[in-house]
Length: 110
Image (cartoon, rainbow, N blue to C red; front, top):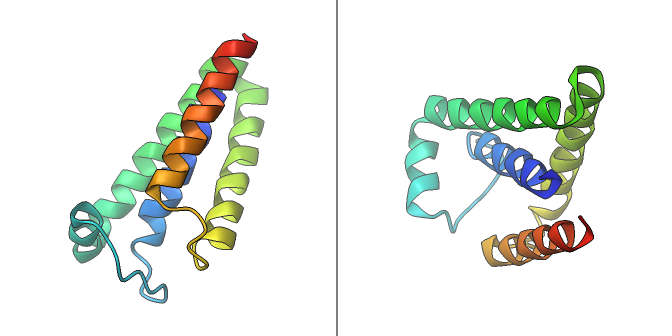
């Protein structure tokens, strides 16, 4: 569940960064290009993903620790996206593989 929450925050940041005019992103897929032409839709999608991930944190951990964990995960996703995105270290395939490994580890440990 925690890997899904982190993935939702990371996708939310990618949608939010999609609205920026200062970031050059030449190889956008069709959905991101459409959302870049309508920045309000991209911000709504990012807000919905942030709210969904925060709601999952609160449902999983309770109100106090869930909100704190959501803030920590939000800062984590923001830092990772700002740090790794300009260098193109992780593409969609890399994030998908990392997510599947994290989900597998979560299921094996629990």
